[in-house]
Length: 354
Image (cartoon, helix red, strand yellow):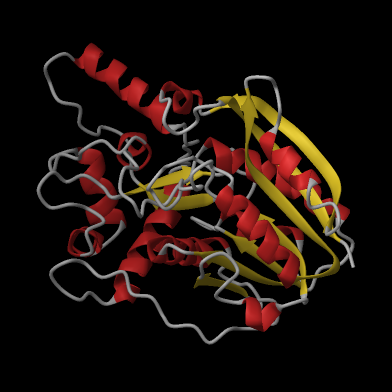
């Protein structure tokens, strides 16, 4: 099954660039990083900020610049043109890539800072697992997120998928860099997979990741990445037909960045997508999700309470607290979470009732 959706072009600001050149350059880069045994497990933005501040303190007055592959592609440090590793990677191992990356704004001309990072989903050696995503800091509204929440989600999804005996059509919503969609593809190799995201930049980056991770995926069981606001862009095509859906939606209250914006309380988008998922799934279809549950000062789990109110429509197969306290920095402001004490990381498995 495929949908007739427009092709996306990730053009630079001052000229049109043949998109295939950019994608090919990135794929070649990923292959070269594999040869170099590159591995980078992505920390939280706060940890990255603290780690780089510590390095700057140690370095003294000299500004931090990239000296290693990890500095360039993992820690998002500015690159000096006379840095040996940079020339070795871009000029020799990836012919024409430097000019292509500059022209496409993957490398910014003035500071030679990269606009993408490359992180590993699992420790090196398990299978090809590099993911392109936005560089640090992820302050742009259309940043493409990848980090500790991704690792937690994929671990939970891989375990939960084992509960499903048969899957022909699976959809990952709020797909970002594509990790959820690609885990579905690994769990259900014969199924048709869709990865959906409202952010065109995320869709493009996810498709580059798809080409790297699944170069030989059969057309009889395709993986398609598409722009969609939740399920809204595809619901008329898939209503009542989906076997499995996975969701890792934004859940930060009051945030304006696409990858983080969960609505006024942080639950609005999550609950909306769960409602749309019920329309998309077949009877007994399964939803696997990862999100943050706002916990009040008296210990009430607001998200679990909202799920319990949907008991006419869903069987709660599993509700697992994966971490009792995440994104603690969000509690510093009284504006976004005035009556919330903490956020818990939770994984859910729901089954659609008739």
